[in-house]
Length: 200
Length: 236
Image 1 (cartoon, chains in turn cyan, yellow):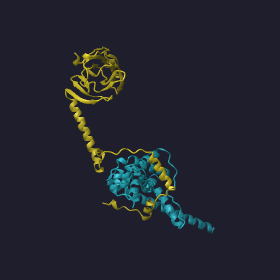
Image 2 (spheres, each protein chain N blue to C red):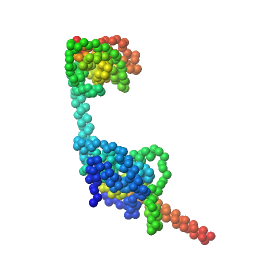
Image 3 (cartoon, rainbow over the protein chains, first blue to last red):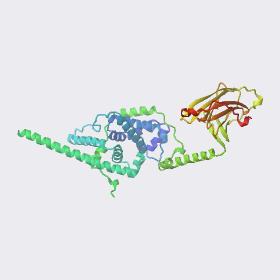
């Protein structure tokens, strides 16, 4: 049976540093997904996640057991991502990377291509959202946090967070619809051009 | 009014948002993190006094902390407004003493009373200097008063300044290893005659004269540097 976060935290506090590895193993992937979506850069996301776990270990004495460890960890992660984002705003923007691309699925290459395209579109659409809205929509939909949990993690009020999620959803839907429409029209256009060429 | 709690995204978009990010060589990444963790020293656990639940954090920051500051400030103003003031202060040298203001005269006393009387021990205190250490804005400055009195047990500062009730406001200092005593006082940088004195073991007085200088903008109104030593009442 897997040990709960609270038990592992208690062990770490008692001096068992290796128990922290289990916590890292448990939360690393979700933290990396959040940071990657938010920052849009794989290297920055890895830095943010590593720094988050180091800080969590350093300040574990401040963690109170009545809180959810994940919420507390996410508060550190959010702050770290905000800091990195503001630091990055002061330096030249990195080139766009397909950071969400995954290993191709040999069983169904078409479905895999669709998924990859959608992820690339989503990553691009997320980048156009204001940071606060991006944070809110990722915490709510990707990480499944409730609004009260999001309020604790971000320091914003519940009603403000609901509004951010609502606006982010509207904007994401609009952006993706526009992109798909333009992609469809360009496909139709190129198809028509190739047909004309064949006739000629 | 629209309910924003039921916001939803298309399922394919949700799947894309929730899809895990590929982590090539995941174990190595985790090892790197643990290597960084092992070199980190954890902060000691906080006591219960600091464990404010999140629901009270805003109350503490927004209401309790400002209210406590206001109460302290009010108490300080109440004390400062009285004719005779006795306040506890801490010096930079780690001494704890009592600061007394009697009318225009301020006497700083060390917490530890002298173990021997001055009458039983010969003393030859020598004033070294009175130096302006720093100027704070254009209204205050810190002066350092020093004397050599290796055998003294207690040296306190007394002073009076023209028409200024609570000066010097801050007294810090103590004894150095070579038998020197250094005290620092915060005095106004105005046209005023600051008369400060060092009381050695409460009996002998080493007057240190310090004439307030005008700042640059008031230099034309500067008084002549007449040194007018004024000894504290307790030594007369």
